[in-house]
View 1 (tube, rainbow, N blue to C red):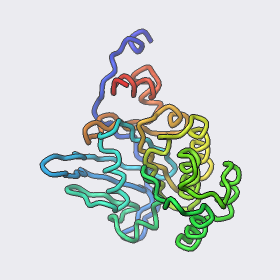
View 2: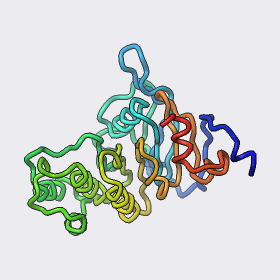
View 3: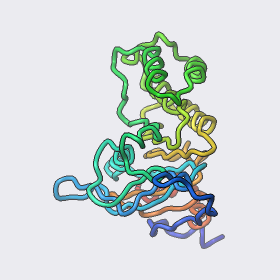
View 4: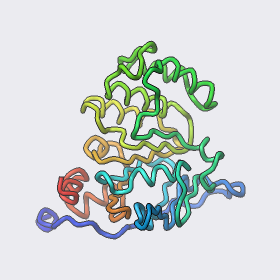
Length: 263
């Protein structure tokens, strides 16, 4: 135990978690044994790589956090998975399919930048989600909106950043889909609201789905995540289950994060 307490924290090579037992063969082109797979993914901006050789797999039933400060490549990875920007090199597959119109139906995405118009009412977004997404549970969303202290008549441009983030997270998590991608869901909101979003994630993900969270705020996430990765200058430098990381470094993920990134 003494060695663990005095061990200097450092970013270590990626370690692959044990693979789950193989299941029955799935139809060609579709795979729900591995919900998300990235192999050697790179994203080039000019003469530099913002994302450089990122490789990992996510299986069903996992809540995974990719942690890192601003500029580490988190949003670039999220946007490539969602098909919002192209991959420069490497391969991304969602349920065995490359990012396309088909995979957009398999992903529910919460971007870091609010996706709702300033003059849009909450009721309008609720109606649009119900019309656009067949997998959207409008009844559950309406109940959660009221529970969060938000009115259907509220206008997004007049809401606090905390209320806006809670409302958007509710819409995203009330879809019944395979993969939930949340980019900075805990940023710019009050600590109490972070707890609300953490509970929202836990209570609304499906048994055969997974949640991938990109964040620079690890504290509340550590309570709910199964796996964690640290990203640094576009590369995954540490990866494992939360229990593995705690055992190897003798400290909580949030403490290790602050030590590694000097924050």
